[in-house]
Amino acid sequence: MVYHFDIGTLDNIYQNGEPLSIVIQGPWLNKNIQESALICRHWRNMFPKAEIIFSVSSSDFIDSSENAGENILPETALSAFKTDTIRAEAIKVLFNTTDIVIQAPGALPLPPIKNDTQSLNNVNLQIQSAKSGLKHASRKYILRIRNDLCLMSKNFISVYKNNMENKRRDYASFIQKILIPEIFTINPLTLYRMPFHYSDWFHFGLSEDIKNLWATVENVSFADSIYYENHPFLHDTNVLEKKFLIRLAVEQFIHFPYFKEKFPFLNLDYHNDTRNLNESLYIMADNFIVANIKDINAYIKKYQHIVRKISKHTRVECISQNILDSIINDPDSLFDTIYPDQKKRSDHRMFWGYDRRTALIRRGRQSCNSLLRWYRNS
Image: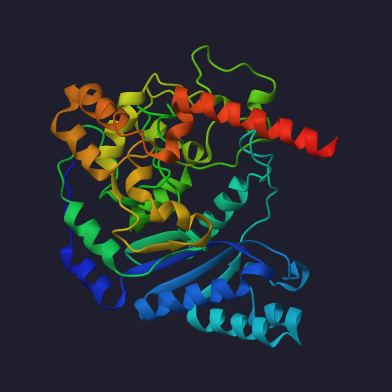
C-alpha cells in the first residue's frame, strides 16, 4: 500500500480548522449543560472554520416527541428552561458555536463492566452517538471526541505530524495513522493482559479511516455484558482480570471488529485472550499514534487526577509511543525490551496494591480498622 501525507492540509487545520470536522459525542444533561456549552465554544474559538457536530447520546430535558427527525432544534432545547436563564444561555452558546446538534438513536445502558463499580456501561449509547455524528461529518479530517474531554491547545496536530510518517509494516490498514490518547491504551504485557485495548477517548485522522473503523462496530449484547456472571474465566486469569463481568472491554468491542475484518486469522474471544497478543501490538504500532495526554494539553474533569500523574500511570498499565517505536524497530525483541522495562518501574505508590508486601500491610490495616469500628459500635 502506498501512503501519501498532505502536510498542507494539516497546516490548514492548524490555522483555522477548515479541513476539520469535530464530532463531539456524549450525554446532554441538566448537570453538564454549561460545561458542554463552554467546551463547544472553546472548539469554535480554536478552530473558527471547522465543522462542529454535537451528537447527543442521551438527554434528560429534550422532549423527543417534539424533535422532528434527528436534528435538535434550538427552540426544543430552550423550551425546557424558560425561567432558568443560566441554562438557557448555555443552550444558546452551544447552538451558536456548533453547525449541527443531533439526537442519536436511543440505546439502553448495560450492567456495570466490573464487579468493583456500580457505574452502568454506556457503550451502546457511545456507539450510537459516534456513528450518528460521523454520518454528518464532511471534511477531510475528523476529530471524534467525548463531550467531557477538551484539548486546550493545537499541540495534538503537531504530535500527529511528527509521527505520521513513521515506518509501517505488514499490519498497516488505515490510509494514515489515527491519533489516540495514551490513557487506557493498555499494554497487554503488564497488569492487564488485554490485547486490542486501544483508547476510545478520541480519534483524530482521515475521515475515511475513522468512518471505516466505526462502520464495523455493533452494539454490545446483554449476554456479552454479563458474560463472566455465568461463564468461567480462563485458567490463568489474574486477580485484576477477574474484576471484569463483560466478555470484552469496551475498547476491544470498538476496535477489534475492524482489524478482524482486515486480518481474519485474529482471535479475541475473551478480554484476556492472548493468542494474538503480539499481533495486537504490531497492529497498534502500524495504525495508531499514541499521544501523551499532557503533551496535547488535555482536560477531562472526570479523569484529571490521572492526567496529572500520566508519566507514572503509563509506566505500568498503559503504553507510550516510545514503546511502540521500539516494537517497529525490533519486533523480535518484544518481550525482552518492553516487559522488564515496564515492570521495574512499578514501584510508584499508585500501584503498591500489586506488591505482595504492601498488600499484606493493607490487609492488616483493614483488619485493624474493622476491629476499631466494631469496638466503637459495641
